[in-house]
Amino acid sequence: MSPVLQLAIATLILGTSGVFIKLAALSPLVMTFFRAGIPLIFVSGLFLYRQEPLFWGATPFLLLISFLDAVRGLCYIIGFSYADLSSAVVILYTWPLFTTLLSWIFLKETIPRRNLWLLPCFILGIIVIYADAEISLSSRSFLGLTSVLIAAVLVASTVVMYKVKAADFSVYRLIFYQNLVAGVVSFPFLLGTQPWPSLFQFTMGGIYGISIGIIGFMLFFSALSKLKASTTALLCYLEILSTIVCGIVFFQEELSVNIILGASLILGGSFCLKKTGDVAP
View 1: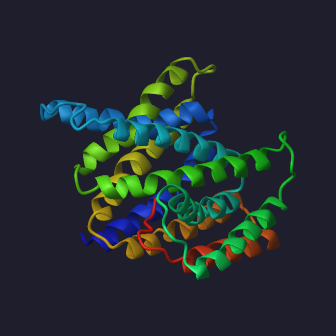
View 2 (view 1 turned 90 degrees about the vertical axis):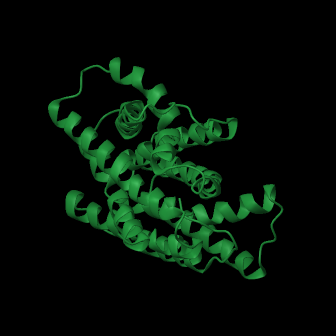
C-alpha cells in the first residue's frame, strides 16, 4: 500500500474517534485506558512473543513524549466528550499556529512575515467558535473546547519529536512509547470505576482502542517517515472532513454560522501557513 493511501486511510479512521468517545459515555480516564491500554497490551505481547526487550531504546526524551501524549490524549477525550465534534476538530487544528510559535520561542526559528499576518486569523477563528459556547467553567462546551485547545498545544509540542524518531524506531515501538504512560496510569481508574462499564461500553471502548490506537496509528506511523512534511500536513485535513461527517450522521450536529466562519478562518490560516519543517500530528 502506498504511503499516501496509508495516511489517507489513517486520518479518516482517526476522524471517527469522537463517535466512540461519545457513544461509550465513560469517564475520560477510563476511556483513556481503552485508547492507550489496548495498543500497549497488543505491542507488549508482540515484543514478548518476539523475545524483544520491552523498553528497548528507552530514553528520557521518549518518556517525555509519552508523558505529553498521555496529557494530550486525556485532554482530547475530555474535549470530544463535552463539545460538538465539529467545533472540537476545528479547534484541534489550531496546532500549526502553536507549532510556529513554539518553534520561534524555543528553536529561535524566524517566522516569515506572511505568517505573522495569518496569526490573527487563528485568534479570531478561536474567538468566533468560543462565542458559540457559554463562557463559564460550568459550561461543558466551554470546558470541552478549552481541553481541545490544550491538546492542540501539546500536538504542536510533540509533532516534531515523532517526525525525528520515526526513522529510528519500528511502527510498533513508536506505538509502545506513545501509549506507555497513558496506558499504565489510566489502568487503576478502569479497575476502580463504579458502576462497571456495560457490554456496550466495553465494545465501544475496545473498538476505539483497536481502530484508532492500533490500526490508525500503525498506518500513520508507517507513512510518516516516507512522506514529505507538506504532503503529510495536507492529507491530515481529511480528519476534519471525517469528524464533521460523523458529527452530522451520528449526532445530528448542525454547522452554525459561528462554526463555519471560525473554521474558515482557522483552516484557511492553517492551510496557508508556510514554515519549513511543519509536520502533522
